[in-house]
Structures are given as C-alpha cells and as structure tokens.
Image (cartoon, rainbow, N blue to C red; front, side, top):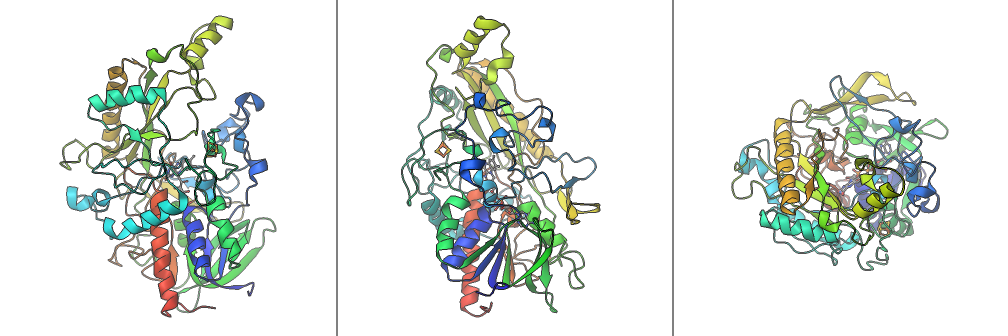
Length: 558
Ligand SMILES: Cc1cc2nc3c(=O)[nH]c(=O)nc-3n(C[C@H](O)[C@H](O)[C@H](O)COP(=O)(O)OP(=O)(O)OC[C@H]3O[C@@H](n4cnc5c(N)ncnc54)[C@H](O)[C@@H]3O)c2cc1C
Ligand code: SF4
C-alpha cells in the first residue's frame, strides 16, 4: 500500500469512525484512520478494578486540580485520558461543559451503553407536532441496520412493545435490583413504565467476547471487552484485513481540496513532532464527533469554500442540540434500611429506564412537545453517596452510613432540546489552540420546552418516591451544564434540500460528493433516546451507500 494514497481517510475512531473503518476495511477498501490521540492500554489506563480506598484521593482526584476536571467521568481511575491540552471556547452567556476523549475509540471506551432505537415518532416528529422538519429517513429504512448493529455489538434488554421505542434483537437483560422492584411497583401504579434498559453490555458470551463479570465501574473502561467499544469490537477485525493504517496523535486540521473544490485529503498535526502532514485519498469520512466534525469543516476554508467546506447552505455548525440532564429526584427507601449490602453498582450502568411516556396519544397533550426519558439509579454503590447527608461522628456515624447504604435512589432526566437559531458552533475569531488551530466556539442555551420537561420530570419522580413510601429529599437545583450529556447532535444536518441541509440522507455532503459525515452531526435533532446506537446504524447505512458508489465508479479506487 502506498503510504500517502488511500481509498478512504476516516477522521476519528469513536463510534462512527470505528463503524466506518470496519465496514470499509471489510469491503476491501484501503483505509487510513486518523486519531487525535493514542491507543489506550487497558492494563495501564483503566483502573476500574481498584476500590476508592486504593486511590490517593478516593478516586476523585487531587482537590488542588479537581476544578479543572470535566466532571464525574474525568477522575483518578482514568487519569490522563480525557483531553485537556486542546481547548474550545464558549460564547458570552454560554456555559458549556464538554468532556472530550481524544483517544483511539473515543468516548466508546467509557460510555454508558444505553442503546435504544429511535422510531418514526422521532423521525416524523415535525409531521406530528408541527415543529421543525422530519428526518429524511423512515424507520422502515433504518430498522435492518439497527438489527445488524445489535447483532454485531450485543445489546441486553427485553421486548417491551412501547409506542415510542421500537424493539430490537436482545440478549437476556441484566437483573433488576431490590430498589428497582420497589420503584417499579410505584411507577407502574402511576402509569409510568419502569423497564430494563437497552444496554450494549454482554449478559452472555457473544461473537467471541466474554459475558460481563459485573465488576462495576465500566465508565472507567472494561479490560475484557464485555461492553461495546471500537477498540474491542471493530479494530481487531479491521486490522486483520490488512486494509487499515491507523495513525495515532494525528490531529486533523482541515480537509484538503483539489482544483474543483472536491476533497483530496486531510492536513493533520502530528502531536508528537508538531509537524503538519498531508495524507491523500479518494474519499474523506469525518467522524470526529458532532461538534469536532463541524470544527474541522468550518476550518477547511479555501477559495471554493470561503465559509468552510460544503457550506453553500450556510448551515454548517448550526442547529446544535443536546440532552438536558439533571437529578430529577432523590430520596431513600426506608424499607431497605439495614438490609444486606449487595453490589448494586454491578455494571455502573443504566440497568433500567423509564422510556418516554408523555405525548404518546396526542403530541400536544402536555405543555411541552416531544418527550423525555429517565434513568433510575441507586442502592449500594462503591462510595457511600449518603455520607454527607448524615449527621454524627465515630462508630455511630459509620453504622448509620452502613444502615442506609442499600437505600438511596435517584433519577437522571434525559430531555432533548429543540432545534434553535440560538444554538450553534462557529470558529472563535480570536482563540487558537496550542497547535495554532482556531478553536471552535459554542453558543448554547436551554429552550423553554426542555425546561418544561425538567419541571414535569421532577414532579413525576417525586410522585414515584413518595408512592414507594420513600423519604423524598428533593431534586437538583438546576439542570446539569449544557454539554454534560455528551449526546450533542446537529451542526451538519441531513436533508434532501441542498439549500437547507449540509448532507444528503446518506451523510454525503451535498456540495462535495466525496466527503461524508459519520456521527451525530448529521442528525436533524435530538430525541429522548441516546445517540450511539443510531450513530452506528446510520454510519453502516452510509458505508453501504459509499461502497456501492465505489462499485459503480462514482468513486474511483486508488
Ligand atoms: C461517561 C459517558 C457516558 C455515555 N453514555 C452513553 C449512553 O449511555 N448511550 C449513548 O448512546 N451514548 C453515551 N455516551 C456518548 C457516546 O460515547 C457518544 O455518543 C459516542 O461515543 C459518539 O461517537 P462519535 O464517533 O461521534 O465520537 P467519539 O466517540 O467522541 O469519537 C470521536 C473520535 O474522533 C477523534 N477526534 C476528534 N477530533 C479529532 C481531530 N481533529 N483529528 C483526529 N481525530 C479527532 C477522537 O480522538 C475520537 O477518537 C456516553 C459518553 C460518556 C463519556
Ligand atoms: S461490569 Fe462488565 S462491562 Fe463493566 S467493566 Fe466489569 S466486566 Fe466490563
């Protein structure tokens, strides 16, 4: 293989990039994958089998530097893994907290694994409630791709027949915990579904990977590959094809264009040597995650593309959506005080969910449109979260912590923001990163609709805790900072009208026929479901389309 000429360059190796690499290598195409980070070594980089008391700062990191942490996932268990060197900026009035994992596999190394399908209630939401646009894809079209992805990666759940949640192909679910049974009874009495989540974690061996051994702390990485991640699932088989060259520490700066303004390669900065390197290919796939992909395209200016490559619609960077996350309610279930302590953090995952139950019969039934879902959590986890809610000292204090340890519960809201003119990313005219690359700047605020969901969810969760005869302790004062959920969508929406959308319905940019986007940047908006399963399914479909374009000569091989 020539070192400088490939069929396809894939920028990013997370969910979208990993799937693209797999599909394209399997099809016999010569692929060069660029990743801004390194390949992690589970034996050194993941410390998830350690207990809080094994870590100098109980896993939470040095208090002197804790303020620079991006939050709960950027901790001592994975020190040095989250990106801190390359910055981003927030516009005045925007508070955007944005953990980024610039490493091979991206955020799939540490994700929460909740993997619901989207359905026509999502893709045709505009037809139902009159807001914004429909997706240019129907459920019938994407259904077979969801099935292929689920069979490939392994997703545990049950068939639930919910109107908002199409069922898929599932491995046996993870068992409910004691507190789940109590909360489920209360929720069911209120007409709120309380069910096993869809989770990309193996409850039985699957496709050569072992079943989960429930050690917990998956958000610090899995050393046996029992949950889906690109390094465990896609890279080994892609490397076996002999068609992949993976370049690490390769920070893509911009897309290179030929005399016709079509893509001819990528210019990247080697983060070890600080040298700029050009790599050429017939097709470029950008899969650096929603905002980073827009960042690269916006920085790809040329006489053909003065405002960024493939931006004749002016929509590049626009229409950013995110999930509003927040603690919608917390409390204790006193019936569990003093009960035996079980490892309820068995997989530190969303074992259960309360899938969307609002606006199902009538899209305008509630004061908000669309809907949200909720993840209940609780029980005995590694660190006694209740320690600071209990007064006392010495042995008596310790006994009280232990007595209450099986009993705390809380609910995390996942509510989609609506598309808005106010929410977008652009290039900061003043700030550059350590490599001299202009930074991406985020403009974002929660919309009224998402905030109404937040109020509704708090009332629902209070009712569930009280209905379970629980001690209700309130909800979070405010939603989490935007960016926290890591489920951002938009910035290069797909649609049929080239004047209004950046890509066509296959993720191929309208302007540049050999430039594709394979992440949530192409999603028209956020729904109540998480994004990764859909990134995988839509990427697989994009790759089928691209491979057919190679077969029919639309794209030439090297
Ligand atoms: C703690 C946590 C919990 C989560 N829980 C869930 C969940 O339950 N369900 C769910 O669906 N999703 C969840 N997510 C989100 C999920 O991880 C993302 O949706 C998914 O990883 C996005 O895939 P991606 O390919 O778009 O981006 P990423 O996985 O972020 O991959 C992007 C890749 O691009 C590379 N890159 C970025 N910029 C450049 C550049 N300029 N040049 C070269 N390479 C670059 C990065 O190194 C990385 O490899 C969670 C994430 C975290 C961290
Ligand atoms: S609980 Fe299961 S999936 Fe999570 S890290 Fe342990 S073995 Fe891996």
